[in-house]
Length: 137
Image (tube, rainbow, N blue to C red; front, top):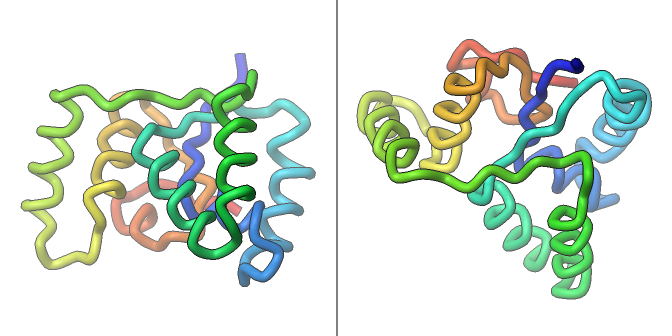
């Protein structure tokens, strides 16, 4: 079985928005590393929320709807719903690291990654490095 990689908002955004600074890196990483089937793709409903909102603001509502349909119908991206227990653990992290600029969504992602034993994140966010995860690309 392939290992899992967490997909963060910044990665989805970079893949969709050609004007994003990380677009070329994201496309290259997707095509050369992810698509050959080396990973199971994991994300959350919080990332879906954040991504669709940003795509709508940066690009258009139609681009956001199109991505929503692709993600929800995907056979390779698993979107996890967040439980009350995960939210509580994320709130604890959010409060513990008050010296960092982690978003609450970041903290939810960290808890999910720890719970599932996922070490790698497809992200451009330095916060994942600060929490000891491997940032890809």
